[in-house]
Image 1: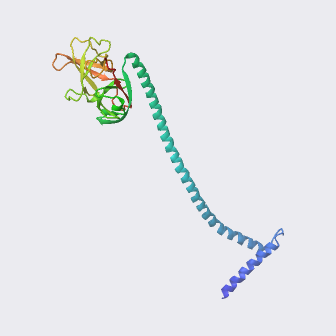
Image 2 (image 1 turned 180 degrees about the vertical axis):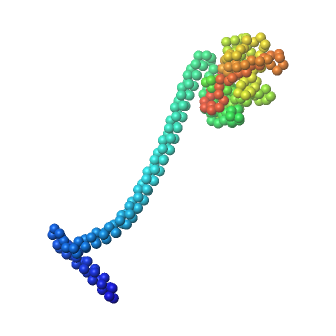
Length: 282
């Protein structure tokens, strides 16, 4: 009880000194009790102010972190959308460039022959050993497409129509041509500029090159010549570029020569093709 009375007395004195300070605040100086009270109050304020400031700062930092997280998430979504839009723009620019080249190609072909080049988009491909042996295009029976029609790109011949569905068709590429399979079609070919003098049959594809056989020993086909379809096979119409001669050797039996041809067309990453429609002759 004595301690309680002492504490009560001290609190009463402190309150008394505070009231004195408020009453005599206009004086220039102050007594030592007043100064003591002011120092005590100031120290007490600092004692409670700093922890309170730390706590307030902690919650303020948490609030800022939430804002930063939200902004960061928004920025990521914006960057993703930007990357997607940039990729789409690049694809559209590449497609626009290809279509301009396709248009230029068809205009040139109109002057060269009376074939009709039906442009088609590749919708799928079956891949083997980094090359595609067949591709599917978005033109079919409803569009007048028929089996064995020649298929080309702006670079050169790539194959023929193998099967036809109402709204799509399968194209067998030259990479699938072989002399051991009756489902493939050999190509009657000749050298451009010597159509009436040169002749051979392309019947296989080996290591990235087309093999043309049955070339007469006296044929003037030489390295560097451009090989085109001759039209004699009644499957591929005449005049379609195929490739360039890279070598010529004696054939397996020594009677005829074998010519290796590097195709003009690329057989991977094909986007658009042309189905060659030949007008029927009366």
